[in-house]
Amino acid sequence: MQLCEQDIYISNEPADKTLALKYVAQSLVEAGHTTSDYLSGMLVRESQISTYLGNGIAIPHGTPETRDAVLNTGVKVIVFRHGVDWEDGNVAHVVVGIAARSNEHLDILRQLTHALSDDSVPAAIAQSKTPADILAILNGQALIEDEPETLPGGEQATFLIHNPHGLHARPSAVLVKTVKQFESDITVESLDAQSRTVDAKNLMRVVSLGVKSGQRLRFIARGIDAKQALNTIGEAIASGLGEVATLPATPAPERAADLKRSWLTRLFN
Image 1 (tube, rainbow, N blue to C red):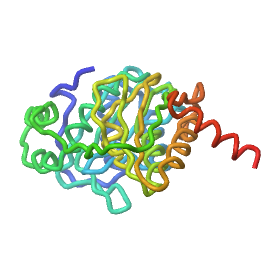
Image 2: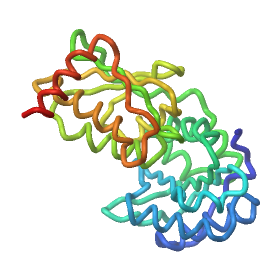
Image 3: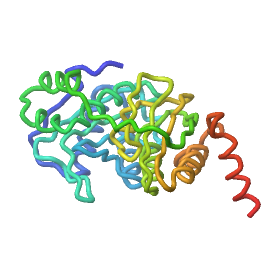
Image 4: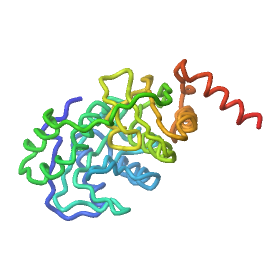
């Protein structure tokens, strides 16, 4: 998939969250990507977990139950000049509506979140006058994010992602929530894609990895609860991160023995 100028809209109308979702859903319908039933899935998804990623971006999408309402995979980007209250004190200025039959959308999502995670981008988009200007920003390669400092040592574990549609918004949010429980500094990288090492506690950064089903994530944890963190992360991934995983996650050989001992200890105690 390739994002194009026709996929980007600018709205100068004030809107609340519900109206914004209706606007996004209608743009997907008009483009032939979904039926009108897809809106109900978007509303249900928001009731389950917010699709706000941070830095002024939200990525509303439907539930697995409304995937039949998706006719063709597509993405629409709506820039709301006045911002949209996305609840919990979050204001979305860029709303990315996603309709996906499989995981084709992950490449665009990776591109968008990579660009939008730069702190200077929201202001640049606010000053843009046309969809072409916004597309140029979203496609820009000049903006370089700060990467987590690489430190020696630390505990490592590699896990295989089996979620059918990869790490889209919901499983990514569950993963980040799991990681945030721990004091340790935890980074993650994809071993099967051109990936930077990112902060595993930053939802935008995790989504920007664009991880697909069958790809491996390597976590490095440094701190007093590093081993516990990796054990818990492995269990969360194995359980499907809020979805039904097709297979258990597979830890890297160097950590497999430690993780197995930990699971057995909890099983028999």
